[in-house]
Length: 324
Image 1 (cartoon, rainbow, N blue to C red):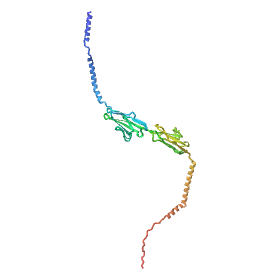
Image 2 (image 1 turned 90 degrees about the vertical axis):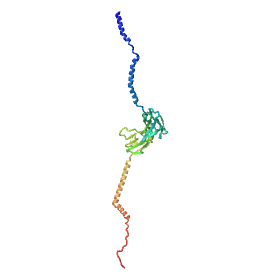
Image 3 (image 1 turned 90 degrees about the horizontal axis):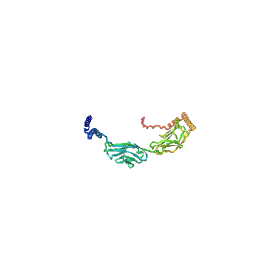
Image 4 (image 1 turned 120 degrees about the vertical axis):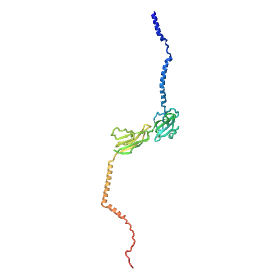
């Protein structure tokens, strides 16, 4: 019992220091963490401040959602211009058209020149009403923000005005001789984009030749229909159709072309007659020259027309003296 009791006292004495030691407080535990956090923050704080001072400011930005605009003639065209400024709430807006010389479209709060009275603006987006071919070209939107770090921004918009084809001009010869080369021409000068052409004979389309030995050629871009050597079967009424994907195609009035055979007999007879006339004239001239008729006639005319030169009058002189 005593041994057990001693052992128990030793165990208690051994456990006593552990239980007697005071438990650390919450403040003591959090202080090292706090110091660690403050030390980390103090290391990163100069970097954060430096980045804030060196970060670039956002300049005025200008863009467009349609850099290329295509509209038909006499319709409205919208030229978009979107901008964002750093500080300036009321930047200056200008539109210019670039050609041989730069001209103002919108300046100082109003439209200029030919755009006055037929254009509107919403924000910086401009709408041109009833555009014509003269309005086609490249436009530039400029935004000036004097309060921003970078005070100028710009964007470009290209305007294409599409023109439907007009009635083309067709050149069709009225007649041709068999075996000769013949060209038929078709042209429209006003369509945008340029028109392509197709030919018709007696209201039926002429297909493009599929082999190199074809007797004709068709150029759909120039509008030329070329026959290498026409035959009588090529006689008929020819017309041309112009189209460019804008509006309705246009066709010229049909014209008739007649192919005639060559009359060999008439040509040979004419050649023989001309040859005989040349022979007769040549022989007649030789005979006249041989008989001297041409020479005598020339001399006769020389004698008749001869006029002796006038003689100067001489003063009377005494060559001898005589006495009374």
